[in-house]
Image (tube, rainbow, N blue to C red; front, side):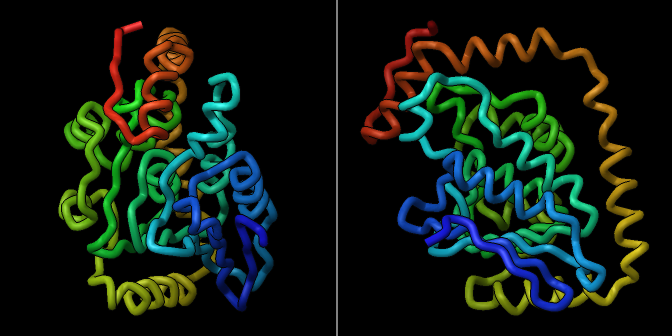
Length: 251
């Protein structure tokens, strides 16, 4: 069974993370399949794309078992998230459960997030000895602002969806039993709007937020790479897989 499936029905392209037994953790195959789903241009009748996930968890982030078995280089997740960000139509994430680390970024790279009150969002990288790239931190700052980004990154603890809704980080919140009803309403509303307007507005927003890429950040990239290849990162991932508390040494 495919780990990611996608299909178009009328005006809606639906992309499904389909690895519930692994909490929809993103391995290399899933990232490639997600990118492919958002690289294929929309048909004339399409108006909106929707990202969903099977099972109780939206996405637990990158597959740590796969990452621990390979050299800790850069993940291909950035190219996949960029494909979602620049997709010419609005993208809605329907988040029924936890969206952590890469799962958090996946949801926030969508244009609108409809979340269950049972869901939590977070970036636990500091707890396993890693750090986000410039690209990933940029998205957090864009949608959450500096204060909330500091809380999410530096503490690493997940925040309830309801709190992120109050802060304006996600667009819609629903009781778990009402999630599909609220999501359907949002998707229907988008599909009824003028398609040329939606495409122009999406392009406008993406372009106006691109200025952060022009800020010099090679030194920050080097710092993040040092963190990624550190002994602390290896220890943090090993501890997370073993479900024990890590012992960080600062090296």
